[in-house]
Image (tube, rainbow, N blue to C red; front, side, top):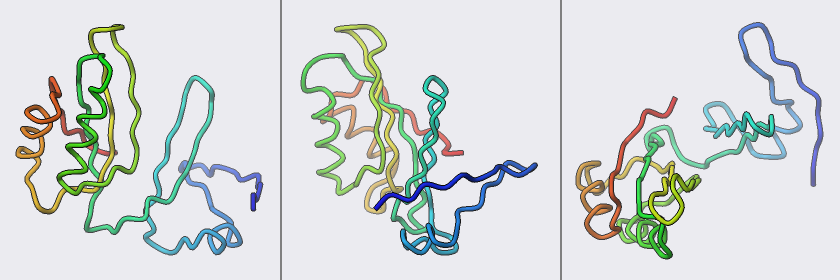
Length: 135
């Protein structure tokens, strides 16, 4: 069921999610939310991510060839490492040459970020993998 509310941003940039909405979505204190803003469409989407504070979400910017199956190989590598993806967005930088996939996932527990980076390049055929701060 959809619930539509008009809310206001205060002078510190904060919004209050109404109690009815918090209850219906099961949001409690310290629930982590993902905010996706699109400056072109002037839209904001806020989604609960369902991970704990200990899992600390992390952002990757993965450069790959713009060829069929490239993104699938990289996604498969994440799956083989047991890493769930919370968010992903791909952009073609140069048609038939270069694409970038931005991914947010929980911080891996069983593998270091450097080991994951190497596996994404080796097995997933990524050209470059950057770990970015999630602010």
